[in-house]
Image 1 (tube, rainbow, N blue to C red):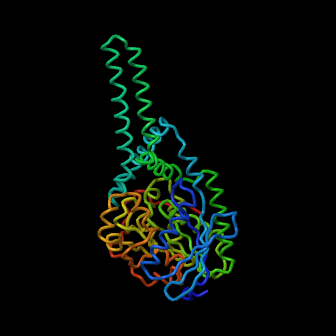
Image 2: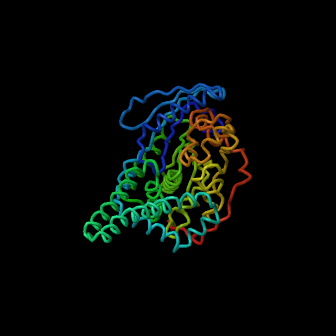
Image 3: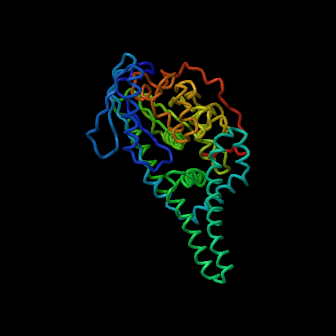
Length: 398
């Protein structure tokens, strides 16, 4: 099929990042923010439930840019795996923190990442600083009753109360992590770091299921099959499509597109054991079958903004690198209000923009143009970064 032919039917597969939030949350974001963007941009967007209840999906009927489209959006669920990986106790979490920090230090990856983009590394240090701060508070809380016990001649009681205070403070911090996000961010970085050589069997099985569903969509009556990967989901999308191409699973003439948003690829690709990821990045970057566009924004402190994920990993040219330019596409008041809101900025790609530019998530996923037709002639962002700072650029043999 021609990449310039108007899209009337599209299959979208949304691949979330490391997020325990269930699929219905993302469906609600699409419903609410899609309606807001339609009102701002002057198009029509209507969501409907899918008849097939075996998978979490919804349908979008749209009139955008002079075209009418029907889009099926399927959420590729792995949040249950995320939830299971976040069940470590407090002591195990501190041990995980030390192991992960040591991995980045001893491999030289930390210094390389700081040279590439300091902002996301500041975010990476957040759980380190907060959790050690919490440990300091817990030690102080334990020290008071221990000191009092010594002073009043009841050391055994002081130690008992001190141990209780120590455990209680740490437990209180962990129970309130939904406000602080220190443990959550630790688990994000640790999960990525410790699975560079492969994925746990349960996730590997899930990825195989995703590949089969994408391959099936390519044989159906679709004018485009679009995979959207956000955050950690960006490099999972890369791995899925690179593997599919090597295995001969990409068949037919249906345009196949990959949209990556707010990627954190160098956090993994700069590690010494990430040879297979570097291979997949290189292979997909060279693919003529998959059109890949990558959006990030300097205002998103949780991503490697405007870094070509292939080039900065030592794999040659990669996707079309474009900026969502939050400072321009959000009104000054809104940009200022959420400038320091880490998660709001990192998820802004899925939300409405009150001063939209070239990036419109809802036009991309429900409009009449393929990703290639929309951005194929668009030049890279002038701030695109391609220099590789990593000492580890070797790739797996396949």
